[in-house]
Image 1: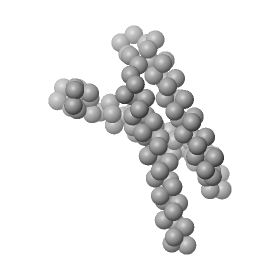
Image 2: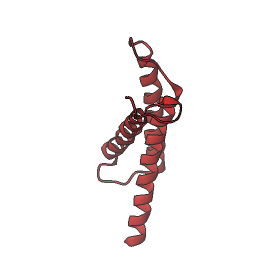
Image 3: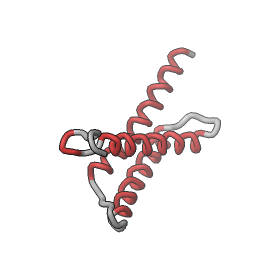
Length: 100
């Protein structure tokens, strides 16, 4: 989009989109695993591994679509969204533990 680009002409909306989608993917994936229990460390690692693999395959898939291309930047932004989502979960969990 004209006028909405970051350094090097990389669209900010694209960055926000990739980050947000994988942030929410990890968040909802964690909710599906939690059930009535809290996430354990192995669950968080599992969520991050699945998210990273999905991000890689998503970019690989885009390389076959006309007009689209696979970019390492997108994969890194996707992974950052997943990591921040899990870090936020851990922070909230820590705050709740302190307050109870």
